[in-house]
Amino acid sequence: MQMTVKNLLFVFLFVTSTCLASNFSGYKNPIISGFHPDPSICKAGEDFYLVTSSFEYFPGVPLFHSKDLIHWEQIGHCLTRTSQLPLDKCGVSGGIYAPTIRFYKGIFYLITTNVSRGNFIVHTKDPAGDWSEPVWLQQPGIDPSLYFEDDKCYLTVNPNNTIYVSEINPLTGQQITTNKAIWTGTGGRYPEAPHIYKKDGWYYLMISEGGTEYGHKVTIARSKNIDGPYESNPANPILTHSNVNAQWNPIQGTGHADLIQADDNSWWMVCLGFRPQSGSHHLLGRETFLAPVTWDTNAWPVVNGNGTIYTTMNVPTLPSKPVKEVPYKIDFSEKKLGLEWNYLRNPKEQNYTLTERPGCLRLKPTSVKLDDIDSPTFVGRRQEHFNFTATTSLEMFYAQNGDESGITVLMNNNLHYDLVLRKEPNGEYKILLRYRLGEMTHIAKEINIPKEKVEFQVKGESNYYSFAYSLDGKSYNTIGKMDVRFLSSETAGGFTGIYLGLFSTSESNISKTYTDFDNFTYLPDNKQ
Ligand code: 6LW
Image (cartoon, rainbow, N blue to C red; front, side, top):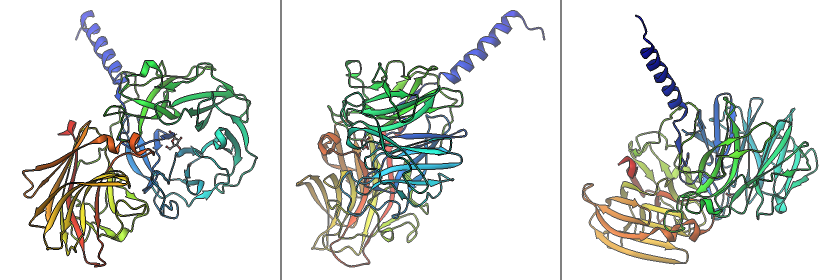
């Protein structure tokens, strides 16, 4: 077939546009939504791994995998045993602070802080499998990080508003060289989140300053020697949303970043940020965001051209590699709960079963309440969207007076909205809509119902949560609506984000009482 010039031109334009389209697909931020703060990333072969902090939740340090930096699938947790993660009575926003994950000569290392016990390292050759027992470090401070070079391992950490470096043995925790102060940042409060990278013969030390609120920023310095002296980048900060150019950006508080280079030599940054949803209040906690980085030879890195990021990023990306999505509708027919489900502190595992009645999550109550700094019978998943609908169906068995089961919108033990089914002394059941606001508890609604089985529904939107129940699973009766701001991070303080949780409590010591939840749905409005 004779190809005319016109046909050749068409083929050329088609091929070119297809190639360009595959590299200019862009992406949406956050790349991991909901309470996933303090991201750290590493690369092993073609695979990227990312961890985030988890505070008083168990298992600890969720671990994600990606091949394109945009689509992430949770493949496990780094801390899955109480021996690695003792959280007994740990306070609100206590437990695990910022982690760092690194890969060196076939071994993955995770270093982090259990804020009531200190800094420790676990390691593994199979990140989706079990990680080692912890080795505890003597160096104080938070946000520990590791840098490997020539079979040496260097620890950076931030006590006394100063970044220190020392050589350690990452498998034993032994400190080999004394702590050397190398930088205090550019004068922002809380210099933290240190990471060292080597490029073009320079050691780059990147940190965060300003605190993890609206003044957050990422700064960087460099030196020809790992122990300094470090010179500050004259263009600092390389990322911040604290200036007028990001005043109306829907993403705020950007900081706590880590850098990674892809196989095509492109550089990228993961960082945390938060998205205010009702005035200046955010509920989802600090989330994980992605930004492209230009890092020319012997130059300073430049983040997304101007040091700010956006929810829509129209930039060239790595070839798209989508991953399996977390199911929005759960019938509890699996033998194990999905990785997105977490407990408050170390759970009493015998109080959670999926096998006693197939297709049901059976919760066995204890006298520990959601208000207690302890581990109640509670299992929850993060709220990851402003607008969602969550529903569950529950039935109480052998309930004693005062026993309660239900669904909670929980920021922490002191701040949560509960939709409750309670057994009453007269043998009947009552639905309660109850708000726990610090020292104040308010019962907004009480409704007597004739039976021990009910469907609950929680709807989230930017400014309100609304609560409804159904006795037939079809028609829902809305019984209340409550301002989201009383549960926000700005009101609560601390570092976590909203969980939607199933719970059960009982004052009696009757061991045979339990509640069966036979489904749970979490449907973002964009999936309705
Ligand atoms: C974390 C510190 C921070 O250790 O907040 O945003 C602390 N930065 O680096 C808890 O997330």
